[in-house]
Image (cartoon, rainbow, N blue to C red; front, side, top):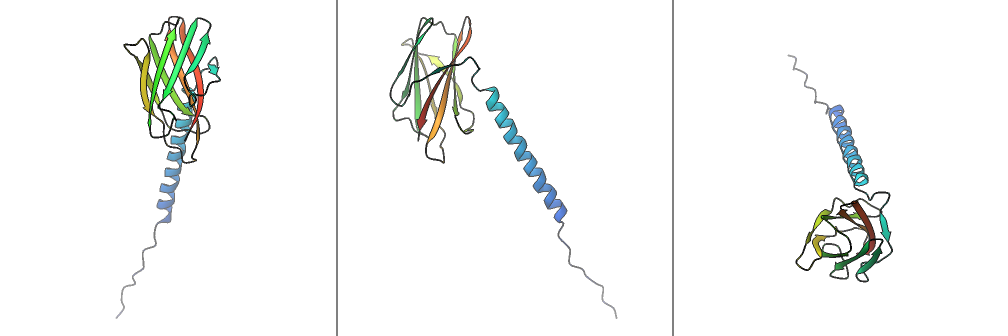
Length: 161
């Protein structure tokens, strides 16, 4: 009597390899789209850079048509802690103010929000800094002010842990 021959099924490596390649391509597309989005949201070429450290206190900036004062707190500014912003303007008519917070050397996600006009004639908003695994991070805070003459962008950098 002859017994039927049973063969052990061989795992299909081609299917697993295809799934791994597909997952890699999907991850690559996700990283490319995140990088593209960050570049489209980056400050414009005519952004006004201000050499002022928000960790040290309020930044006072003289503009051609007025003054800008930006304050962030509570200090020291830290990751995963509330970050309160207050913006005062003199001589500048603003209809809308947006803030964009980006890591200077590495993509840290999207952190874009609007400031609201307060009863004290200042603009206020709150956010939180993302946590950085390297311990310390250089942040770029861009304030975009919508004026009757068009948008103005102001860039401030600070370091936070």
